[in-house]
Image 1 (cartoon, rainbow, N blue to C red):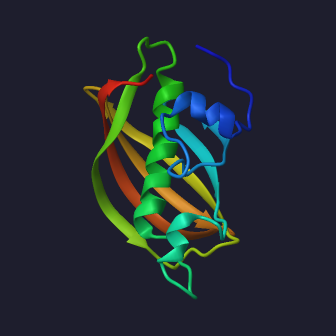
Image 2: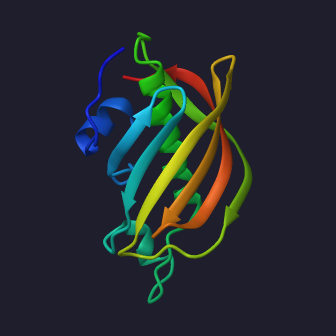
Length: 152
């Protein structure tokens, strides 16, 4: 298994995920224990395109993008955990369960995302996810991701 040196920056994340701007939702991987947990950072900035319409004069990060950031962090965990696989599977979000949004996330805040692997069955990953701002949980969900092709 490849050794990673944390934190991982955006360029290193791009080696693990197929996502690119404007849809790459992670800025940094702070820590990762393969098959167990990953901690990622998403810096929420005012120049993100969705803020033009969500909502003018009162920008709020869409909850679906917070879920996407959690799913991408889970994808990083899955890829690092299966580093020896060649070709690398491409993981797709298959299900979202028990999503909760506790307060709005606004530009200037930093999301700290923790994703814990709950189980892996037939290549599918069940993740328990939390997103925090200043130690306060702002969103949580259970995500199920499934392999569905090969990553390039």
